Image (cartoon, rainbow, N blue to C red; front, side, top):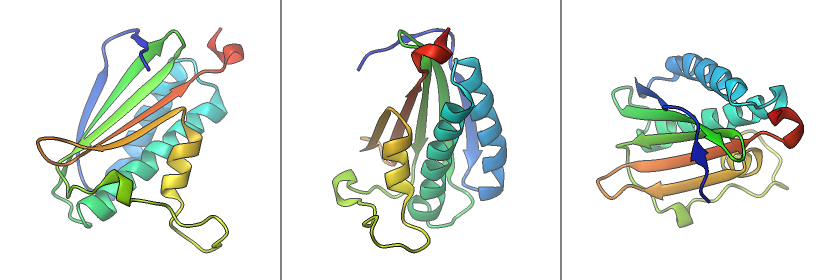
Length: 147
């Protein structure tokens, strides 16, 4: 899927420290609103992104706080929306081997993958050729909110 880019992207580089995620969520929310998403769509994008970052920290870097994470926010046009790309150098996993648990299995945890797939319009999770993983999330404004 090709979307035109409206303006230069915003880049962030953080360490794999959970306490930094609040600031990233704030930037993501502000960027999503600026890109024309309504409050609910902003919340969906931020929750999906937070789940992705939490997985990088918890599973990719196995809780280590010295791992690098790069986040890029890009405003999209035609249709209006936002793209969030997350890159890391964490342990690679086969995206086909990752599956969320059955939704009928009611207990805490294990729903992040399901949330990421359902809360955004585009979710991609791929191994990077030079090591680490790449997560791509895109959320578009509904026609009523894009005006």
